[in-house]
Image 1 (cartoon, protein in one colour):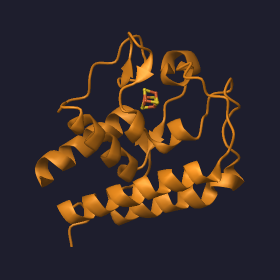
Image 2 (tube, helix red, strand yellow; image 1 turned 180 degrees about the vertical axis):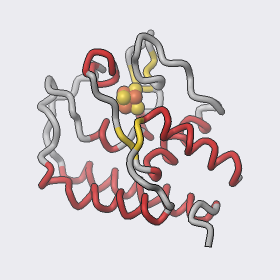
Image 3 (cartoon, rainbow, N blue to C red; image 1 turned 90 degrees about the vertical axis):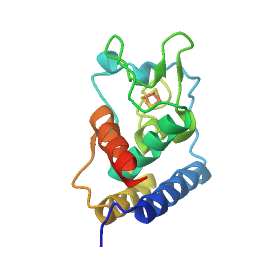
Length: 152
Ligand code: SF4
């Protein structure tokens, strides 16, 4: 069976959104006021690493926004950051790392023990899709876009 069949990609999308929903339900308090420093990779020296399921969700968000390609990155920032507004253009589809706030000003990364079960669920979805390991946000999204294009 093809792990990236359209049906598997659809199911993976639902499962990833379910993980994101359960993360919200944990109700871990953070002081994120959309400073967007975490989206400025050259400042932080860090980039979100995405499992294939997360990348599929992000790529779907990009397509729903009417784009078929990843916008060019400016100044080493995340390509999905709206430079003028300073906001994420794919906020509803943003990956787990962006939701678990690795930004120190907002309170730092969630304790692993609080979210390890959710991470394992993302890893299980990745394995079901034949993913190997998390990849940085741009290359992961490019792979996902290719899969969605060929599987439509
Ligand atoms: S996906 Fe959105 S929230 Fe995450 S780093 Fe990029 S712009 Fe920021």
